[in-house]
Image (cartoon, rainbow over all chains, first blue to last red; front, side, top):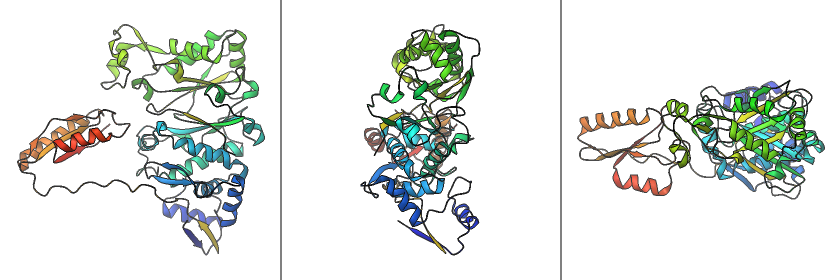
Length: 343
Length: 94
């Protein structure tokens, strides 16, 4: 691995060096010295630091534990968060994520990392109040480290490897814990087929689209607002039927829905049924539609769903007190991946 | 003085490079590989026609890329395009 010697060891000199080389995310960084990187790798005891965890497009950079650790130091991570970071990067290398498209598109898509299970509390991730916001070091720095790996190893630098027209704030950091203690349906990862104490999901999508419901004491009132937030011609998923929607329900909304006897799958089924627009609206808005074949045959005056299967509506619980939830549409031609947390 | 490690890591697969362009286009076949982005076909077919007018090349049938703009062409699609063209125009437009 290449080294650089800085004769000025001030934080400002490191900041200037990274800016001059086109590295970093524009924010101050922690110097990735050999000692700090070694400490980071110490959290991956027994694992080969030079094993290729993933090859990341568009640069096709090799993400090894060592190169991931360098970026973890830069981001301000603690060593104990390395397994979460390594698991997230391994997930991004799974072909169905389509990282080449995710990084290179003009859409603002970013990588949302969701931490599930025991790791949330054991490692200090925030899954409660302000879960998508600032103030928690684990959420902030692990999300930032994912982005730094994408910038440095994957080559997703704006202009050369990331063509995003406007970008979006979540390209700085985008990591949350799942509030499993407040989830009536258990951990999301188990619904995704991962039978493990802890897991990590990566979902390539837009910033959260908030919806609020302060009045309803039954599921439909809440979920009609979620469906309304999903049924928009403006999002990339509108012309791509395989696109996923992650729905992060706040604990109070989840409790109201579950109290009526609804399962996680019921929520997905309802949103699949209700997040719809007339087929004519899609046809007028998009000359090119990436639809399942059956969708092309639906008459103009019938309603078409925003996604072609209820399985594409993914529900988990996050947040604290209050009645605000959110929808996170995907970029479209990408599929989320959930993996058991690496030791 | 401090020594720091580079954050970039090694490159696994060398990036693809453009094939060498033919030096003479007279009689050569130009084919547009359309990725389905709005107006991409319009722009590239216009460029193909202008190139043909100026050089004596022949414009072949445009190939619509199966996966659209979001995914790469597979090997079969690339082989078919390669067999039908001496010069391929492709690109994007939004």
